[in-house]
Length: 91
Image 1 (cartoon, rainbow, N blue to C red):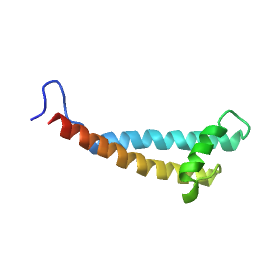
Image 2 (cartoon, rainbow, N blue to C red; image 1 turned 180 degrees about the horizontal axis):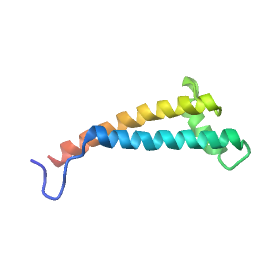
Image 3 (cartoon, rainbow, N blue to C red; image 1 turned 135 degrees about the vertical axis):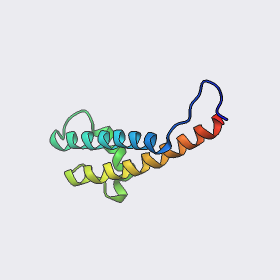
Image 4 (cartoon, rainbow, N blue to C red; image 1 turned 90 degrees about the vertical axis):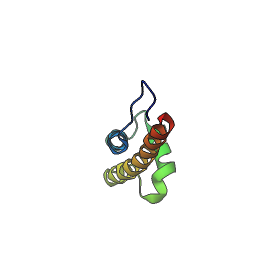
């Protein structure tokens, strides 16, 4: 039984929404870095390169798509687990 005042989270919808937002964030920031290479974002793309650089991410058009795909999958899994745990804790 769910505790009063709380409702369960749909795990798939929650994870999908977060994954779409994060993938779009990575895609847009990387594309901005490709278009304007001397902007105020080298620290952000450097962080992405540290995490996803070994598996195909780079500050290029193709790298932006690859990074967005990896972030989508990672975020989906993480947020699905978060929603699952939340649902278990409110039971």
